[in-house]
Amino acid sequence: MLKEIALGAGSGDEHVRAALRDGFFLVRNTVPETLLDEAYGRLGTFFELPAEIKADCRVPGSNGQSGYLPPLVEQGEKGRAPDWKELFHWGARLPAAHPLRERYPARYPQPCFPDHLVPGIGATLGELHARMARFQLDVVRRIAGALGAAPGYFDEMLEDGPVVNRATWYPPMEQAPSADHIWMVEHQDFDLITALPRATAAGLEVLIDGAWTPVEVPEGYAVLNVGMVLERLTGGLARAAVHRVVAAPGQHGGRLSIVQFCHPAPWTVLSPLRGCLGDREPERYPALTAQDLFQRTMYRINRLDSQQEPAARP
Image (cartoon, rainbow, N blue to C red; front, side, top):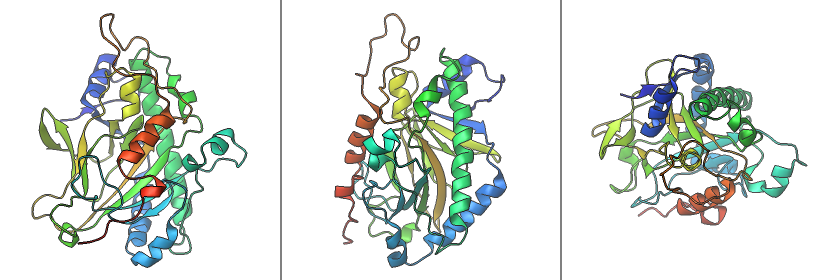
C-alpha cells in the first residue's frame, strides 16, 4: 500500500520522509479530470495515425525531448530488446535569448504540437503541462519542508528547468516483434520527481523487497516517484525506486499514460542537502551537475540523437 502525502499540514515530516524512502507515494491530484480526459482523447487520436504521418512529428536535435518517437528506439540498461512503446514529448517554450536555451539547446527544443493532424491538441497539452507543473511544485515544496530545508528550496532549482511531459502508447503485446519485448523494462527515473495522474490500463509495477508490486492509483489521486536527482540531493535518504511497465498474462489491448518529469535547470549542482546525512553517515555521491546526470543516463538508454534509429524487426 503506497503512503499518501498531504500537501497541507496533514502529513508529518517523518511520514513524508518514510514515503520518500519507499520511492513511490500518492498525492491527491489538483489537475482537473476533465482536462485529463481531453488530453487522453486527443493523444489517443494522434497515436492511432499511420506511422509515416506520425514520423513527420519527430524533432531533430532534441534527443527525443520534443515531438514523436517511434517504437523500438528506447532500450533500458537491463533490457534484452528495445521497449515496445511509442512516445510523444512536450514542454514549455523559453525565449530564444534565454541563457539556458543558448547553453543547452537540446534541453529546450521548441514544442511540436500536431494541430494540423489533431485540431486543438496544442492548447490542451500546453494547459496540461502548466497545471501539472504547478502541482509538482506544490509537492516538492512539501518535500523540502520535510527534509529540513526552506519550503522554497527547490523553487530556484526548478525555475526555467526543462520540465517535460511524456505521453506513452504501449501497443498490444500480441503485436510485439518478439517475446523478448516488454512495454518498459525496469529502470529508475533521472529527474527530481515524476507525476503520473492516471493511465488507461494497468501495468505499472514497483520493486519492493525484491518482489514486483502492481501500483494501483485511487480515483482522484496521482502517483509520484522519486528520481535520481532527489536521491543524490538527499544522500540516498530518498530512493529512486526501480519500476517497470508490463502487460499481465492474458491482458489484451494497449495502454496510454501521461507523466511529467520534474527536471532541475541543467546548471544545477547536485550536492547533498545538509541535515539529510547523519553525523556518521558517509556521503554516497560525488557532486554532479543535473546536465551531466541527464547526458549520462540518456546515453545509457539509447536516447541521444545519434542513437535514435528504431531497431530492425526480426
